Amino acid sequence: MGLGGPWDAPDYGPEHIDSAAEAVEAALSLGITRFDHADIYGRGKAEAVFGELLARDAGLRERIRIQSKVGIRLGEAGGFGHYDLSGRAILDGVQGTLRRLRTDYLDVLLLHRPDPLLDPAEVGDAVGRLVADGAIRAIGASNMSAAQMDALQDHLPVPLVADQLELSLRHHAFAESVVLVNHGDGAGVSFPHGTLEHCVREGIELQAWSPLAGGRYTGRPPAEASDADRATSALVAEFAAAKGATPEAVVLGWLMRHPARIAPVIGSANPVRIRACAGAEAVAEAMTRAEWFALFQTARGKRVP
Image 1: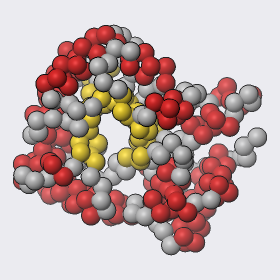
Image 2 (image 1 turned 45 degrees about the vertical axis):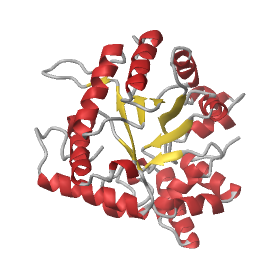
Image 3 (image 1 turned 90 degrees about the horizontal axis):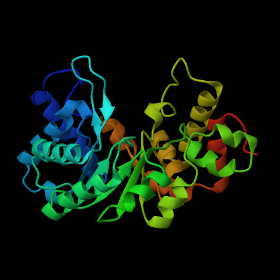
Image 4 (image 1 turned 60 degrees about the horizontal axis):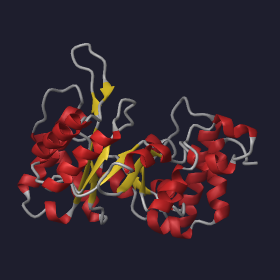
């Protein structure tokens, strides 16, 4: 998302390509070979810069997997931004993405945001054409509930393979939706109940966007941080020291400890930050239930019932 420079800049330059190369090299050095895009990131510049890297290295494309997202139209010339998962928008969006990335196919296409005007049959037709043409190899969702995915799946020619949601130690409503069933506080939980369970049952990979919560727990807490944020940052630092890990690895490890095998999308273009995520798998494997709940309840600011 951060590749290609500022969103409001009209174009990118050689320095942005070099920065993208450093970020990709940092990821590859850790064994990270999946890269997440969207047609709106940087107003298209993020994909275009990544395409420059693919053009530089003829062998890179076959060493990695690329997914991108379509379905959001940014407001232009004072107009309103809106969601658009019409068949035409999906087809045009994918062609634009492939052109910018300089590739013939996406490993996975994600539908970026639920569209209240979505026609499942129309989406199914568009996805069928893209699969048949070899433009995409798989289809997934982003920010969708179990019910929305079920309604869509009835019209898709292939199974949904992923759902990308905001999941993190800070955005922990996915865990609250479980523990607050049949509890008064459950009414205030925004996460769509049953979505994690649906994904596990159907073999849909759960991907977490913003899993590091903007670095809230891995550095100096921001001035507006709550008491719970500060306490969580301190506990993350304590666990990191005890485990010989970075705070980033602890925060990601907390997510990856979940039996749904949540895959965090790191999101950073900073090579130092990317490398700091190394070791998250080891933290996840070693994290005890008591440690997991300690982090969860500290981030909540209160104990679970």
